[in-house]
Length: 115
Length: 107
Image (cartoon, rainbow over all chains, first blue to last red):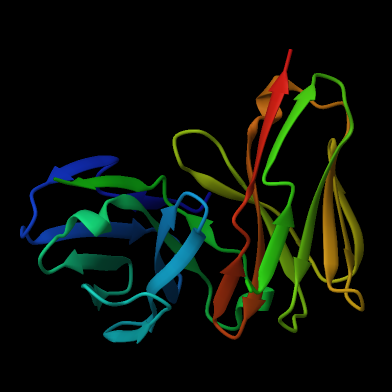
């Protein structure tokens, strides 16, 4: 079974803090994704990575950065957390190639609250 | 306008009812995914289909590529089917997601 593990299920941070969300997958997938999920808006892509050290902006990259130093690990960084970044964050991975041919496997999600 | 529209947004059903969730999309695709998200957050892939119909247990997914429409059906619904069902349409390396249909099945 593919496993995508997110480091925390719940996080509470203060405005201005630097926040790290970690994601690890164990199936040697090339593609990894970070989404945020908000009521009424669905899943929105923040960043994705198709290889080590490679990254591409998604639809809402502002206020976020990412790091992929190893194939299995994809980190999402909030440089200076703000209250509007309170959300559910979901990591996913898939095999290399176009999305049409590959199932995405999701982590359990991290519910982040920024106070 | 969203690239992927789902209906209904919320659905409450009695146990045993037949349920239909609809997804319409405007982006060109060669496959469509149905996902299930249980309370607590985890998302699992139910189906990936590019034509016709797929069946898995009590779940049936259909797609009409020409009409850019897909449906997810649940036969003999059960309270454990209560979840959010999300339609996802791939484009390049990314997906466009519907906002989800929240299903509650009452015993």
